[in-house]
Image (cartoon, rainbow, N blue to C red; front, side):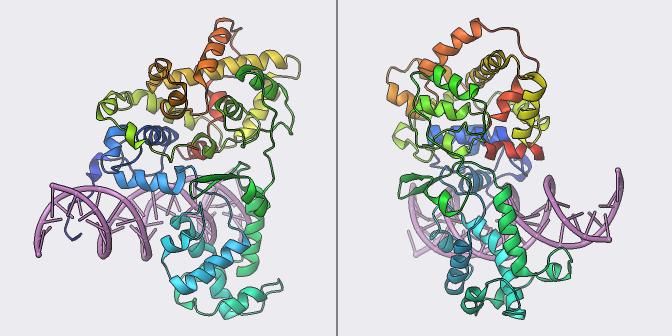
Length: 407
DNA sequence: AATCACCACAACCGCCAATTG
DNA sequence: CCAATTGGCGGTTGTGGTGAT
C-alpha cells in the first residue's frame, strides 16, 4: 500500500509556489462554505489550480482560524526541547501539545533555532553569560540532530547560539504583526489570554457597542488615534464589521475565520457546489493577484502616508466618508464576484445567512450593511484619488496581505 | 549602492497508515 | 484479502528578507 501509486495530481496542471491573497481568499471562502471533506477534489471545486495537498497544507499551516502565529515563548521552546527528547521528530505529536501551533511551525523552530542552540550548548555547555542553566541541565540527549551549525558558527553575524536565540526572540516580539489572536482549544475560542503570556502588546480593547454598523464604523474611524482599537470579544457581526474597518490595526485572518473551521457538512450540497461561481472568473482573481503587486507590504505605513497626503488634517470627515464608500463598494464588488450577494439576500433565515452563507466576510451583517452602503453610494461625493482599491486592500487580513509582497 | 552570505519559513515531495469498495 | 484512494507526517527545498562587507 502506498507504493507506486499515481501522483496526487498532474504537476503540470497545478500552480506551485507561494499562495496569492486571491488564492487564500478563494480557499477560505470555499472551506467556510463547504468544509474540506475531500482535499483531492477541493481544488477543482473551488476553482483553484492547486494540488489538494497544497490546499490542505496551506489551510492547516496558515489559514486555519485557530492557528497561532508569532514567536515562540521561552516556555514553549523549552517544552519543545523536552518533548523532542522523548518523542524525537514526531512533530505532529509535539505540536498536539501546543494548541494553535502547527507541526510545520514547530519543525521549523526546531531546525532553525533550537537545534542550533542545543548544538552550541553541547559544545559549550555553560559558556553563556545569560541565564541558561535551566536549559543546560535539561538538554542532554539531542545531539543527534545537529547537522547544520556550521553556518552559524562561522558567521560573525551572531555572537552565540543562545544569545542569538534570545536576540531573535526579542526582535521577533518587535516585528510580529500586532494582531489579536484567537486560540481554539477543544472547540472553545479563547481570546487574549495567551497574548498576555506572550507579552505581546495588547492592541485590543473593547469598544462599546454601537447602535448601528454605520455609526459604530464612523465613530471608530473618525477616532483617528492610536488608542482606537477594537475588541475581539465582540462576536456579533455588526461589531465584527468594526474590526474590518479598523484602519489603524492589522486585521488578523483569525477574526474573519472564527467559524471557518466549523464546516457545515450537513449543508454540503453538490448542486450548490456547482453553482459556486468561483471556477469561472479567473480574470477577477488575477485582478486580485495583480492588485497585490502594487501594494506595499507595510500597510500601516502606507495608510499613514496616504492619510498624510490626502487628509492634511482638514477635511478628515469627508475623507473618511469617501474611504468608507470606496471600501464598501469594493467589498460589494468582491462579494458580487464571488456570487455571495444573491444567496444571502434571498435567505430569510438571518442566522443561517450570518453563519453559513456569509462566506467571504462572515462578520458583515449584510442586511444593515448593504442597506447602509446603498445610501452611502448614492450620496457618494467625488471620489478621492487617494482612496480606492489600495485602501480596501490595506484592510486585507494581514496574513493574506503579507503574501502580496512576494507576488 | 551593490553584492554576498546567511537565516527563517512557507511550500513541496515522497512515503506510510488508514480507510474504503 | 487486496488494491485503490486519501490524509497525514517528516524531510527537504526554494526563496525573500536582512545584515555584513
